[in-house]
Length: 165
Image (cartoon, rainbow, N blue to C red):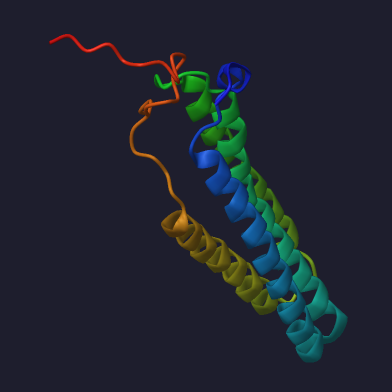
């Protein structure tokens, strides 16, 4: 590790996990959107297709906002002390998601073209896919429990350690 890279802004251990999770969840959401769109179209024609696509898009947006808020909040965190900005960003995002969900639910509930069961099942499938992807990515990631300087990583790397007898 060079001195220049050690002085750069440290990224949290969760950052690669959330990034990887978002990538895999996007692929899963696309697969669900294609499959549910096809099924929705076969069952309820164009209205079923639209319901499936909107259900998958809203599910992905609402689930993805949580991971994105954690990524943004962790990039602002500069030390290991508790940071209220982190909590504020994540909780603020959750509150905005709640308000947006209520508004969108009331609006969609009044639309005659929406096929409710296609929309619901697609949204549930996307949410479950996000949760499964999160579990798999988290279990397969290597997140350190402690922040320890290993020999050779410090500023005196390559120098002999003086030992007193």
